Structure formats: C-alpha cells, structure tokens
Length: 446
Ligand code: HEM
View 1 (cartoon, rainbow, N blue to C red):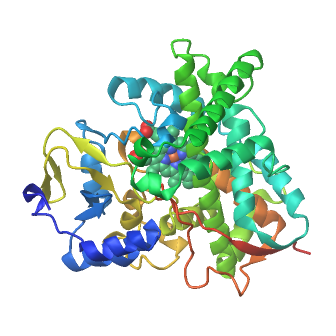
View 2 (cartoon, rainbow, N blue to C red):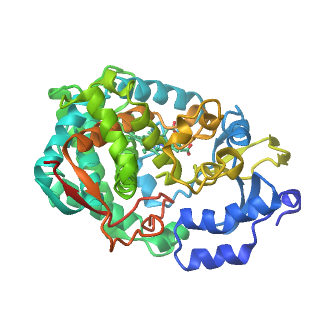
View 3 (cartoon, protein in one colour):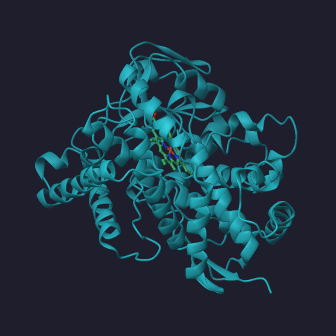
C-alpha cells in the first residue's frame, strides 16, 4: 500500500484476489468481504485492491456526497484500449468533463425529461403480456431484457428493434454479439491485451454497429418523432459525432440496468406473496382496470416503496466509475491524497447497517415509516451532478410494468428456482447486478 494511503483501513488482499480469480460477482464480494470487514473496523471508507491498484471505496452516502459533489472531482480516465469506448465514443454525457459535460448534460437531460412516455411503456407491457398469454412457467429475466430494449429503442431512438416480437432479429442479434465480444473478461481485466493481441474482427463488428447508429440518426432527420433523438436535433450546435455518441451511451445505459431491476422486483413480489397481495390491493384501488397514468403513481406509496426496496436490495449498479482529484480531499474522517481513485460503493451503502438497520431483510415498509432518514442513503442512481439522468425514466418504466402485471397476473417463484436463499446475479465485467434465469410461474386471476 502506498505510504500516503496507509492511514485508511485496508480490506485483506488475499480473499479479494481469490474472489476475483474464482469469478465471484461484485455484489457477493462486497457483501461477503468488504462489508463485514468495514463493520468490524467501524469504517465507512476502506481501501480495496482492484485491477492491480488500491482504490478508496466509500460505503456511506454522507461521505459519498463529500467527494461526488466536490468541484475538483472528475471521472478517472479509463484505459484507451477498451473496446467499450470504441463503441460509446468519447463525445458524450458519460465521458465528457467540465464545460463540455455541462453542454452534453443540458441537452440529454432536457431530451430525457421530454421523453418519459407512460403510454409507450404501457403499450410495450401489453405486448409483453400478449406473448405471456395465460402465463405458466416463464423465464421472466428474458422478457425484461426484451421489454427494456424495445422501451429504450422506441423512446430514445424512435426506432422499434422488435426485441419482444423477434428476439433473434438482426439488430438485437448484432447488439448481443458486440456486447459479448467487448465484455470478454481477459480484455476487461487486462485492457492492454488489445494492443498485444488485437481483435480485428471484433473491432470491425463494433464499427459496423456504430455505423448502424449513424444511419439511424440520418434517417431520423427525415422522419422526426416523439423521441430523444428528435429533441436533441433541436440543438444545431451539436456535431453529428456528439449526437451519435450520446445516443449510443443512452441506449446502453438504459437497457440492462432497468431489465435487472425489473427481474429483481418481480422475483421479490413472487417470493413474498403478502407483499404482492398488498400491492395488488393498492393498485386496484387507485387504477382499477385503467391504463396507468402519471397521476396514479403519486397515490401508490406502497408500489413505490417496493420498487425502492428492491433497488436497495439488489441494485443493478454496484459501484460508480472511479473518481480522482488533483488536490487532497476530505472524505469522512480521512484525507485522500490527490490522484487516488475513489468509488462510491452503492451496493455497500445500500446495505450499510448503520443507515438501514436490518439491511438484509426485504422490507418495503422501511420507506413508509416516517423520519428514519433512510432516503438520503437510498442512492441506487449515484450521487451529485453525475447521478443517473434517467432515474425517473427508469422508475416510471418499472412502475408501469409492475402495476400492469399486478392488474393481470398472480405469480410465484417455483420451488426449484436457482435463486433460493438469495438472488443470484450473472457475472458482469461492468460490475452490474443482473439476475439470470429468473423463472416465475404466472397465472391469470380468474
Ligand atoms: C435501474 C436503472 C438504472 C440504474 C440503477 C442506473 C444507475 C446509474 C448510475 C449509478 C449512474 C452514475 C454512474 C457514475 O457516477 O459513475 C448512471 C449514469 C448514467 N445513466 Fe443510469 N441507471 C439506470 C437507468 C438508466 C437509463 C434508463 C438510462 C437512459 C435511458 C441511463 C443513462 C445514464 C447515463 C447517460 C449516465 C451518465 C450520466 C453522466 O455521467 O453525467 N441510465 N446511471
């Protein structure tokens, strides 16, 4: 450990290395190694060995705010070679900094604000139910991916990928192939491999996919609609490359994350039948058999609490992109030296016993009990100016899907589920928590 970091409690290195080598998912590593260590050390700021360097992990929202809202803090530069950046480009709201970020953020936030289409989410939910028919045993996690892909396609890009109707359609297939190739673990953990063993075919695949987006934008210019791209075009000072990169990054940020959240919340509702029954009573009282409207959701505190609790319990996003500063930073009781990478560990913050009490219990009511201070620690979308610009978009997408499911089906988790005991997430090179093979038994109420 560098001498200027030795004052910070250090998570033991060998269990971490073993965890990386065994392919353990990020969320398990945090709950099994980092959180118990921090609890024993009574620390909310710890050092964690990641990808060959020591990083500061912040496990508490108050300390998180100190650096995530600090003006001198910026995202750490990620390895140039990673093909993920070839895909997203570098001229977008996710990668830009300073004044350039402000410019992108203004346009993307404004466009997203105008694109929270409850009716469109509802129409795609209906399409999903038509495919599910009367129910039966269904691999729900597949449906969530198809639903969110079409949601982001139609609303952000004004383009229907038809992932629900044609899961093997050309665009969807191309997208999955590109993602699988750029997520190859050896190249994620050792990005310089791309220099020594360049993958020409994968580069061509990525470039071809990026070109698809460019063509889509070109077509959109002739055929505007009620979508984010059309609204972005109202800003003629943006370049073609900036339009394209923002659309790709929004498309990518908007799909897997919400799919994971929808898999988790429906799993928990299937697991806790009393929670499901109470939620159904609430939504039927408010909506009856009507289609959801924005004003309905203000009258559904329990549904909102369930979604919040589910995101607290298994947040799709475990850690932020590392941040750095050119000056020393006070974080909690520690001074962090300049250039030290710091991450907000959202998974740990959302399971911190000091803020949440019995953090391992699934308890939506915790959000309904007054004045617990819980809200300030509920940070699944990050913190500060760079927190997720699409948090409302995603929350409404979840509210629409779950409320409409409750109107139409009852469901349970099958006895032989692989998720007995705890919900299992797939391995993700981008440290996401996305449950896999979530099978649910749906039945239509008589
Ligand atoms: C459950 C769903 C989602 C979760 C948990 C989530 C989480 C996050 C988090 C934690 C960040 C901040 C990362 C950091 O600070 O390093 C972020 C940023 C971002 N998210 Fe989301 N997100 C979700 C859905 C979406 C959706 C639906 C979209 C687009 C339609 C989206 C687009 C973005 C973009 C563009 C950024 C970068 C913002 C910036 O750097 O200024 N996200 N998200």
